[in-house]
Length: 136
Length: 136
DNA sequence: CATAAAGTCTGTAGCTACTACAGGGTCAAG
DNA sequence: CTTGACCCTGTAGTAGCTACAGACTTTATG
Image (cartoon, rainbow over all chains, first blue to last red; front, side):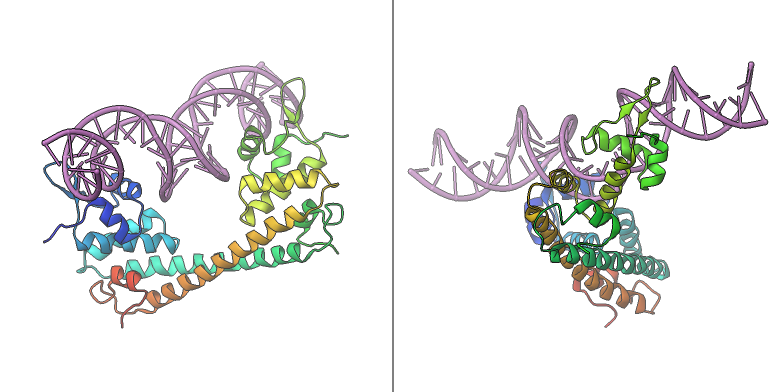
């Protein structure tokens, strides 16, 4: 297998910060790569895929521990992925809650922005956020 | 002014963890409260309002620094709250982006959950997240 | 061919926003 | 008068990075 990627190249290909890659290795999220004589890390295509998976997982809001589980499941295709499904299901619920919360925030912020009396006296921030209403 | 609240009471009234209140004091987000002879902190009603504002702000996704700015604005009613409006506007944009991202996540996760072939072989997780599609 | 810039290495410290102790003092009830 | 609930300070831990310091290697330029 060709191991043509240095850590810098992997960083660019995967979109993951170079220091973060080393960090992921340290916490055993990524396997230890092979090294060339000078001690430089070298990676192959599969490392890019893995790292992209990690990045996307993080973007999707999965924690490191969850991603670790998912990677382990992916590494053992002989096992049923019921567990992975359950993880995804749990996460879906979490995501849906997050969306609802953010939509509530959106509503309040829209009201604050809509408040056009530009003096703190009329646009009393503390009360506004406290009571979830503005300038009424 | 009556300073009838101990830190524990303030914690209950504001919904902010007791240790977190001390932390907020340490980082100068909250003013240093008066102390009784034994060294216990004592708070009044305004502290509750302030702390509720902080909590709500955090819930709305504002960072500590942003909240500090908002509190300062609220403390000076003579200043126009244009700055506060701008902060809220900027934050609203951020929240809207987050909602969109989460909705994209929701879509992907729904697909993963909908994938009913319960072997990792067919439900190839890495490719799934990488390509944003599942079991096609 | 020399040198400078860019890349890599390890290790440690810093970041945000908390949370969780340890080890001690204080206060109210039974 | 002791037990338990509360409070105090200070430090260390948490997640998930990010940013150095100080050293080595590789590559590009004059």
